[in-house]
Image 1: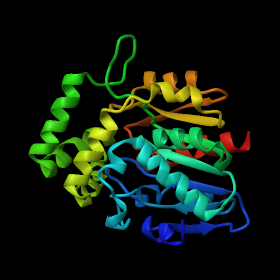
Image 2: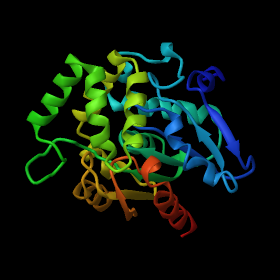
Image 3: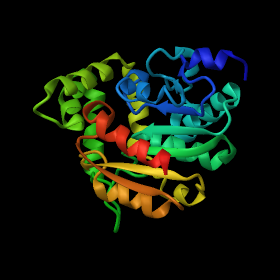
Length: 267
């Protein structure tokens, strides 16, 4: 790949240019700005890399491909290609929500590119299954996707506060809703299906990169059981349950998230 991929993903590199690289990957309906309260805290020790996934933020609209990005593997291929181009050496990749799964797929594909993974609110499958609690029934996911199809803006306004939690801080839910609304509705609908209908549980066994699973004590999108499930099936992983509510501790609890990350990286 040429430097064009860096431009197309709207890559920004800050921090200690001679330090180890830490790459932050955002979740569904968001962009790199969702890391603004966490990423700068590592600039004194790391080369901090932010980017936007295809179809998100300021990424080149032409980067998004309907077929390529119909599965999370397509996004994982993007991450691998971007890291190859940036040539940063093995990186610490911090993935939030669906990007935690994307990080796992990328690490399984190219373990040489990754030093460690930090998985914030990961979920390899959102739908409940026999003996597995993903957080949603199949009927609830179908209803969620149908509501999104019928009125994306209305869906964004109603579901964002639930995802964020922290009802006493409504500005957080409003920020997430605004982020959803900035996303191309067609891309968001397709990405939602890719995210909520995927089942990547079997992929966990292929990952050998040391990992930290960060789980909020209350999360309507990825319950505590899901975080423990991921931890128990990732060889050599650590588990951190932080005192935070909601699915986006990068916005609602940056202090707790940063502390968990620093403790892990120092270990």
